[in-house]
Image (cartoon, rainbow over all chains, first blue to last red; front, side):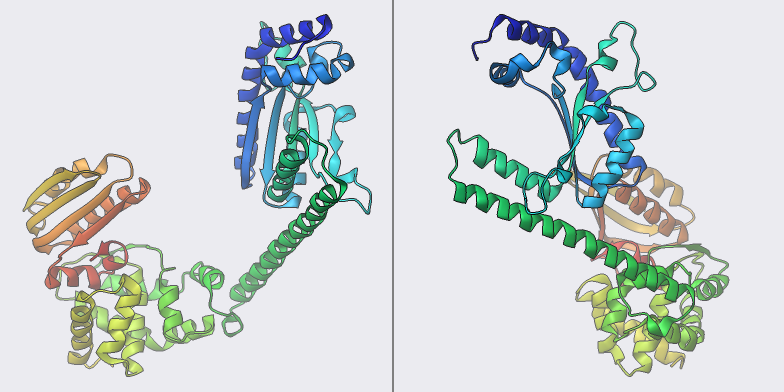
Length: 360
Length: 100
């Protein structure tokens, strides 16, 4: 423990007496940050909170205790940190923090804006805040609304750099030669560029998704490449509703709406390149797919069917029409259900059913 | 219809024998009730002795699958006879429940 003068010892004593209040504050701040991230549909890499340890505070007081008149002048006894994926999310969360807590603007710093045009280094947004009485109030502990705390907001890459810089630059305890510091700052520049690129890529992907969704909504299916996003948008239009409802009437069955996304691999393996290919499959093979269901279900008392049976039967008809035969069906079942010896029996049985009723 | 449930380490092994139809679907549902509890269940059902399942049986399997998924677990039906597998196939239930 550091040797402290009387003034600093008094601050340290106040800290020890107030520690439980800071722990309460820590729980409030953490819960509020987690709620704000969740309620706003944000996804962050981490939310960290800590109350400064006694020896860490003693070290700080030994170095610059003269700057503080009392414990309430020290704003980082409680520290919180939100680490985001993207740079724009730092600003989003900052705006939300402003709504939740009382921000002490005079002591809050946007370190991202403090660097000169030709400088690269520590980038983080530091807000000094208080817990407003509207959020939490306990008459027995008014200090919970009086003590300030610090929230740091930064991206994952900014966090990596800050952590490495702290580890290499400060913790080593020796002065770092200029060229090593320059190397650290060069990496800061590189990470800043990477952060910007990640944000740009995310925006471009979002723009692409919106474009695809509008093409799907307009029914412009031939212009839409078949992939996970476009298939999801297509399924949202419920394209197999009519067929499954028709199949359900065979036995007055209940329809269980299962997820059809697993058919993406199957359709791609069948050589489908666009949503237009699926539309043609739906239009050209629906009647035969229904006939297959009639021959399979009519003689049974099965009164529940999954939505996927519509697309399953469409694929079966298509494969047999394309002269894929039993082998084609086996490949279809292997892709759909996983490779298994038993898929040979499935394929034989299905091909025989289609064949015996002259469906294809 | 008989249901035997055995717990082995982290896996629950279930053996089904006989037919699941309107006459015994309620009993089947009661028998598998223990499978609806516990975190991250890993359930294997040996169906080699299962002769038939009706729609009621399919609904109970569906309920079990949903319960297992909600608890981030997994459910597998094993050694299922071709005539029973056909029921799962033609109703589309093979797309919902893993059969190996």
